[in-house]
Image 1 (spheres, rainbow, N blue to C red):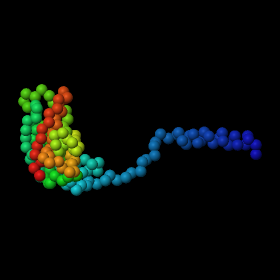
Image 2 (cartoon, rainbow, N blue to C red):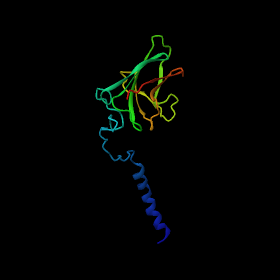
Image 3 (spheres, rainbow, N blue to C red):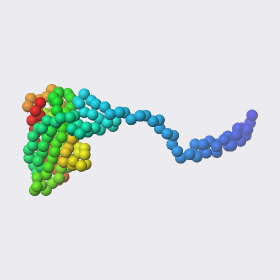
Image 4 (spheres, rainbow, N blue to C red):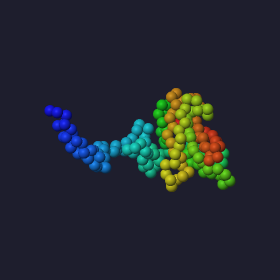
Length: 175
């Protein structure tokens, strides 16, 4: 065979190949996988398919333990935690309700909590979030419990305001 006999079939096939590759704007469908069902962890909290908390109407894990209320800067803070033991190496769920004082000139920008000592040595700070837009004063998060738990550990709450000011206070864990 000579070279020209290959050129003719290739020249005819090339437009067809390009048409097949570029003629469709649809992408192949991704294989579908079913969403994971809601599940529980050994921390007693129910989670949905994407890790979000599933509220059963009593808080995340049922009954709660009131940890107290105190003034933190221009805010009043009330802390609660899910009922159950605080166990080294596990996590614990907390809700912090923050109410601005009537004379407050700032708004809450972020809330962080940790379990341990005030300097947070050996602790992991957890950033809390508002889970329910209908309850914008309630900030929720899970905090890792240090292992070992330092002597005299407390729940520490840091409120950062919209002007960059930070106020820190603590609550007894009531284990």
